[in-house]
Image 1 (cartoon, one colour):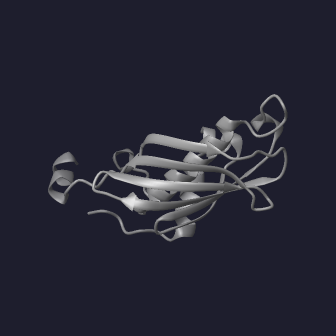
Image 2: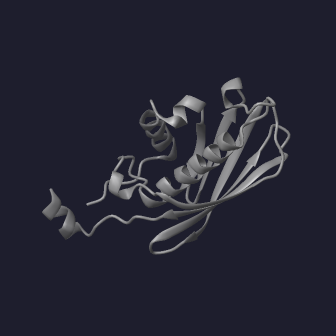
Length: 157
């Protein structure tokens, strides 16, 4: 039987713990809210996230948006608060428009699931700067794993 869902706050605490020692932690993504079909995260500018002209590196923006999409998808596919690799949503495809850039402040990513199919999720993410100017738009298609039937789980264990 799938464990019951935890509160959004408990889920985010667990997600922060799981992120220790990963790229998520190294560049400083903070997940600030999660709920049905959505997630919000923040990322502060720092020199290690900059490209040669001193602005956010495009790769840092894309990774940040993808992490936020994955947070929304994780809550959608497995809000139990138990990290289960077989239920982890994997990004299959990304499409990104980089609109503008900045060399200071905090970026905010807002993810929204726009499609939930049997096997995939489509998540749209908008990234804003401190002045709510649009920095980037990302669309991610993610594998939407489902928990195996109870009888299959009892055979596995």
